[in-house]
Structures are given as structure tokens and as C-alpha cells.
Amino acid sequence: MSVHYMRVCKISPRLAPAIVPVDCEISLTAIANFVIIGRKKSTNHSGTGMDPSTSFVADYYCVNHIFAATILGSRLSNILARMHQGRPLTQYALDFLRQQDLPGLFPLAGGEITHEAYIAGLDSVYLARNQAAKAAHQAKQSEQQALEAHYRSCRITYPAPKAAPKLDWEADRILRRKREREASEAVLKAQRARQAELKAQREYNSKLAAVAYQARAISPDYRVPTAHDIAHHFELEHIAAALCLPTSDILEALFRGRPLTDEELGHLKHSAPDDLYRLASGHLTFAAYIGPARAAAAEFAARKASEVAAEAARIARESDPKYIAMKQTQALYGKYGVSLSDEPLMPRMTKLLQLIDADNRLPQNELVWLSTEARSHFTERLQEAYHRLEAEFHADQYRRTQDPWSVVNASGHYRKCWRAETALELLDSVSPDRLKHPKLRSALLTTHGGVMRDLRRPSEAIQMGEKAHSLRPRDYRPCTLLGAVHMEQREFERGHAWYEKARERGAPEKSIDSQLRSIFQQLAADARKAMKTFLLAKDPYRHPWLNQTRQQEAPRLRKRSG
Image (cartoon, rainbow, N blue to C red; front, side, top):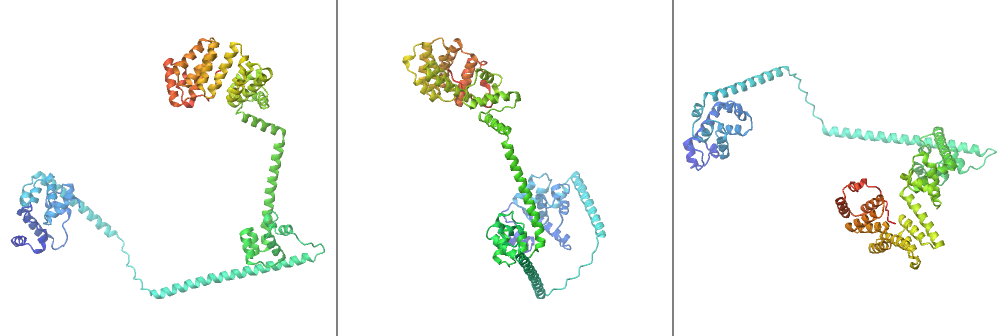
């Protein structure tokens, strides 16, 4: 079928692959249009042998005013070029043309109309827009051609470079090798000459040293030089290695004028001052060596003297009684965590710390001053030391007098300096038979319950607190103990009830608030949240610290009930 069709259309077999199959949707008219267009192309441009430009093809189809048709490589310009070349279009290309707002172009591509019918079907406005775009393209082309002609006339014509004569590559290689060999030989010659110079200088240095040594040896007051004398001769007595083997033997050889072996020269190169090696290897004369060596020795001596003077000044300063007292005071303040910059308070605070550090109790007036005027400096470590001394005092009092009230006082202080076990031993030593008075028994039970609370034995603490309360129903101290233990056990309703009883019995509001705050700070996060919710529900204004963040909370100072 394809051969028959080629005969009908009179198309050469060369174009046979471009013919679409019979079952394709492209009609016979479209194929004829492609063939006619191809012939026009061959007729119009056979002399030039060049493909028509994009603008030429766009003008042929009167689409100069369509921007995509004038862009080389765009989809529309490629389709127009295939139509102009007489090549069939794919189904995708036909679908693309159908979607464009181009009157008559799709029917022309599909073979429904001829090119003449396509041109005749365009309206005058469409043709006018095409002609205006064509004129603009031509004007732009003319302007570019004028610019090209202008720059072509201004171009400088340089004479053509002369052809480089052909090189004889083998001769060039031989010449290059010869130059490299001559350069290497020159380097070796220079090195040998330098080595000869160094050798001559070494021999000359050795000769001078030998002559000098012999002159000294024949003098009446000659004595055999020591290693230190030889090091001094070379200005090296400040270097410890110069007095030790093998450097001392090498220096003696230089001193006597004996030539050095290669091994000795190698040792000096790696383990001695650079100038000494240069002297021994012949790079320097003794006269050139000795000046810088003396300067280096003088610099070392000056530096050493400065260090000695600084050390002497330090020893003198640290031996000064005022300095010693100042350092001791600083250490004392650091031991108890006191940072005091208020000068008027320092003398009294220093005496107070010295008193505490000597294991002496504080007088009552000093305790009052420390708790009021110097309250901000009453640190946790200082409080711990104070309570320890008070506890030991009352414990000694009990051992001497067997007064149970001393046990109550000592236990309270032991608890505040984190020694609940010591307090428990002391409480267990009290015989119950001696506790006749209800007030004393209640006080001991309350204190004992507080110790059990510290030792994480809440059931025993509650039992002792309730027994103390039954002995002294109007005393608030057992109530605060029971309130604290129940709060720590997350029994907030019971704890709050006991604290309310303590308030009714005269417990200071500040003391209760301080205990609640201390308990709150020591609880886990979930328990803190529950306690906060409970207390705010009871009274949203009584405890303002509940709304503080963890960073704003005061340092933890555990305050136990008595």
C-alpha cells in the first residue's frame, strides 16, 4: 500500500519513512499539504541550502504576533516548523493545536483545508496584527545588522601569527636532559664546596682551641678544668645538660681542640643549643659564637634573678602576720559559707566565727545579733554548727544532771543539724519511770516523734504525736508534729485539720507557714501539685508562695516541729 501511495503522490522513496500509515487519522489532504509545503521549501531555498528561520515560518502562517511562534525551540514553533517542512504531526501535536486559540491552524494541520483557504479565512484585524509584528521583527533585524556592520568596521585586524617552526622533539629532549644534568652537577659542586669550607673551618677552630689549651696548660697556675669550668668557657653553665654526660665530654673535646665524630655532631644537633652545634660543625667561629652565647647567659641570669626575687617577695608576704590573719579569715568565712562585704559587720562576724570554730557556744546577745541584724549571713552551715554546739552542750548537761529537759533541748538541736540518729540514742537512754509530769512526757514524746519523722518512720511519729496530744491537749506542738507528718504522707485533709488545731492553741502563723513551705519544697512533683491544689482550695490568699516557680523558691532549710 505504501509503495502504491508513493507512486500516486510522486514522492521519492527517500521520503517514504515520513509517510504515515493508512489507518492514521491524518487525511489525504493533510499529507498533500505537507508535500506541497515541502516542495515550496525546496524551491524557495534550494539555492541557499539553509532551513527557514522561526520568524519566516511564523510569517508563512501569519502568526508573527503570537510570541510562542517566534521563540526558537518552543512547542508551537516546533510544530509550525514540522508543518513547513512537510513532516506529519503526531496526535499529541494535533491535540495541542486544537487547544490553542489560532483560527484555521488546526484544520490546516489536519488536512481539512489548504494553505490558500487558511490565509483567505483570516480576518483583517488578525492579518493587521501579524503585519505589525512582522514589521517590528524586520526593524529589529535591520537595527542588529546595522550594529554588526558598525562594529565590523571598527574591528582591528591583527596580522596573522607566524607559523612556529617545527621543533625537533628528540633534540629538545636531549637538550632538556643536558640542562637538568648540568644543574644537578652545579648543585653537587656547590654542596661539595660548602662541605669543604665547613671542614676547613672545623679544622681551623680545632687548631685554635688546641693552641689555646696548650697555652693554658703550660702556665704556672694551671689546674685541670672541671666540667663546670668548661661549661663556663662556652657560657653554658646555666644549662644542666652541659654538666652531664655525654654533652660534658663533647664540650671537653671542643675545649681541647679534638675533632668530633659524626655521632657526637649528631648529638649536638639534636640535644644542644643551635649555636653550639654551628660552632662544632664549622658554621661559626668561636668569636662569632661567644657574643650571642654571653647574651643568652645574661638573659637567663636576669630571668632567674627575677624569679628568685618574686619567690622571696611571696615568702615575705606570706610570712607577714597580717597576711596570715587575712588568709585565715578568708578560710574561716569560706568554711561557713559566709560572704560578707559590709565592713562595719566584719569585726564582730569574724570574732563570732572564730568562737564557733573553736567549739564554743554563742552568747545570747551574739545569737540575737546573728538572727536579726546579720540574719542574711546566718548561713545553713553556720546554723548547723550552732545547733551542733547547742546539742552537745545540752547532752553534756543531761549526762551530768540527768535532767530530761536537757534531752528535749538536745534532741531539738540535733534534729536541726541533721543528726537524728544521735538524738534517737539520747532519747532511748531516758528511763520512762522518771517521766512523771505530763508536760515533760508530752515534750519528750513530741520530740521523739519529730526524730521518727526525720528517720522516715511516720507511723511511729503519728503514734507518739497522738499520745503527746492526749497528755497535753492544749499544747500546739504535738498538733504541728501531726500536721507535718500527715502532710508528708499526702493526707492533706488530716494534716490541715491538725494545723488548724495548732492555730487554735496558739501556734505562730509564721511557724506553720514555714513548715508547710518546707514540706512543699521536699515533696515530689505530683505530690507538690496535689498539695498546692488542696491549699489553694482551702484559702487562695493564705500561702502566696504556692504560685512561685521552683527557681523563685527559697533555699531548703528543713524546719521540724519541736
